[in-house]
Image (cartoon, rainbow, N blue to C red; front, side):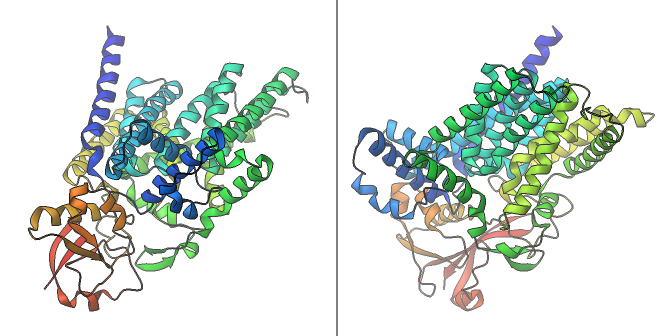
Length: 531
């Protein structure tokens, strides 16, 4: 009866989370990069048709191919959306983007199920595992991005699933687990190169676990060869770029993937100063994490990592010769997750000098950080006379309840969340809606409140308006015309990401404030109307 009750609670919570996404997936705007991603999918769809069926490129899409760098563009997700659009003969771009939002959220939701099973396996506690799911789901920026961020959230989702099968391989190194793990490792690596870290760690830990008296069993060596071979095969399958000139393109894929981020050059508002993305302070991502993550999660994470590192340090100091720093599978799993965090952060700091758009490039580590945040709850009672675990869980639930109310109140602008401590400091100090998603809602306000159409709209921000105009229906597109004439446009939109080539004060002399979106006292988007 108790098991049935727990299963009912688990199913109800997961069903509720997915229903939330189903009701609101179309509420979010588009990012600056979305049209490039869509075109990337169309390009590779045509490319595969030519490669497999020897069909010529669609002449209607010929201009796309001039703008796609095949070697650095992750293709799986974009190709999936292009295939769905082709399969169901969907031509309206706004419908394609809505499908993309729903698919991205669905994949994220599936990864939550895998994350629950990871936590259940490692914590052996259903309720703590559910708490971990809520901590992830109710992190506002992660929640908002789960609909439109088809790079970082998609990668995080695949990373979670890959971690699940990583633990399976560490637990039982048979051909079935090897094949599945190789499949998802290849998918993760072909999405972002940093996905190679868990794959490499698995090989290293298998070697360390199985070697005895300086000898490595032939069976385990064969399994590692299978692991590497299958992974390389799947990488080729997931990367159409490699299908021609495989060896040369395989090498260029990795070199381009490692260094491509360093080519990105944008301006960030950070701590009240404008920084080039290639010259931001080393703590750029760390500070963004600290100011945009719920307070209780940060507090538990600091405790969790402190106690774990202390425990690991003691284990290393007491090691005997030829002894591993783990005594059982549970400790091996913990070391695997911890090394993923450490090596990923080190690799990004070393290979990725370009800091931009908060800490979204590190989202994939967030579930692992939540695990260590929860793990500390299992051990704290040893140090206190009262039940500190229940006390801290109560504080977490209160914090999550407050966060959920904030998310509801400020929907659909959860992407500009700052925590309780930082939200009063961010004004004029940090970028807010850096991807320009709120531009879509400015369009909706104009469409709802104006009567004379068409109107011309310009922006004085770095974030362009073209992407979010694509998200409008065909009828609404005819009412909104994008203009680059800042002196004569009917409306000017400002989403507050600096455009250093525009003098705002000069432009806005001939305009009056018409509408603004304000979150926690911070303006994230303003519309000005011609006087």
